[in-house]
Length: 141
Image 1 (tube, one colour):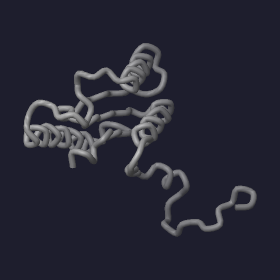
Image 2: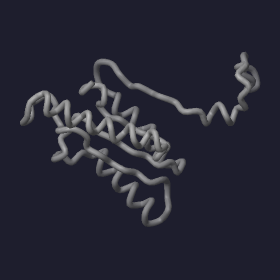
Image 3: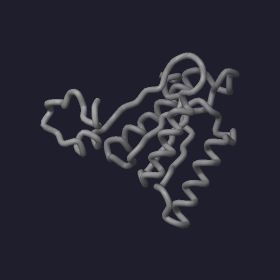
Image 4: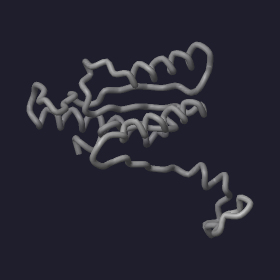
């Protein structure tokens, strides 16, 4: 790519700006660590761009206080107080089961996770946020 010129330009009729602003789905999956970290890094960059960011966590218990939640809630407060970045919402979806079994049956957990997914679908249809992080969403699926 000499002098910043692409080797191939897509023949889709879109300008570079239009291409950059198209919706994008990113799925971080696989064994090991780093999936949530990658998603939260993207959310941090989105917040800095002034996007409305919504985080939906599916596996962690609603009773747990997590470092990333505290950090993003602090950024949400900073936005509300000073207008820095964008607004952030944090939601715990489902019953919060993990490696140790929580109270309730698998059906209870599935019902709670489905209710969370329905809320996300409603927000997607309304285009309510610029960025959605569905943390550990693939596990209840």
